[in-house]
Image (cartoon, rainbow, N blue to C red; front, side, top):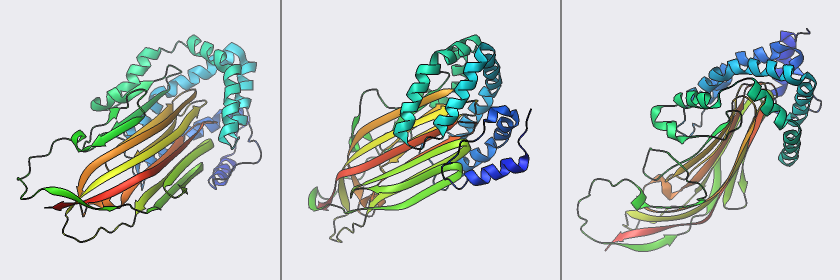
Length: 382
């Protein structure tokens, strides 16, 4: 068996860290099981970068959960590898080569077409091998779910393929509790009535009436990009009222993060009006996938935060094949804030991340957000 020299492997990692797409195919790592073992030894380093992000996630799902899923499913990797070789070694070798080609395609449209071809060619073979390996889906779904904190276990959803799962969740206004997004509802309207009732304030000495209306000019700022090993990421503006972020990884392992914020330079008039009525419409879109081969889970996320509500989608492929999610949402918000509140200038932000830890494992996430309408109205004491 031919082994990869540690110095050469280190050089490969340094090359991939420059975050540029390779022009030439890499050699088949399955010719040397040491490469897969080496990627396992680096898992903790990638997880550490996620745990210590300069830009923390708004999602309630702890990084520890994904690390524990990787450890739980690791023994199944070797079992599946042996089963596929026994079932049809030639077809399995062909699958590896085609996955190598797929992982080197650098456009999402072409990659989507190629993955569709892979499904037609290999999906039944993978299902047969999965069944022959005797993996108890129900038992492992319960084990994975049990790794979550008890109060988060209702948020996870399994898609039926090879233990792949996802989260599609949102945080209502004024709450720290996340809930699953209801199916087929892509428009959410939030107002002060959705927030928990605060203690009753003293009876005001006057009635608040609407005064001057402001229409903020939008500015994109606080772009943050992180690239670790074989990854790429970016954050950028979309027309005059939008922002977008993307991240993707390539083999052998890597992590990418992109985030950007949409704000205004609004300075409300100092006219004795101490409160403001916020009316904001947000359109959010996300498209993400996670693809895993020979293990080491891939996790792709897309999220938004408006300062009043938040949403997150996470796609996870822990063992085999791929999982993708797409979303298109309209969020309408109507609430009252103090005039000195940061939300007089904060519009929203978006964040995309991808982490992959295995040979040929890779993923991508793209998310965009626009604010087609945003007004702030003085509430004055009369």
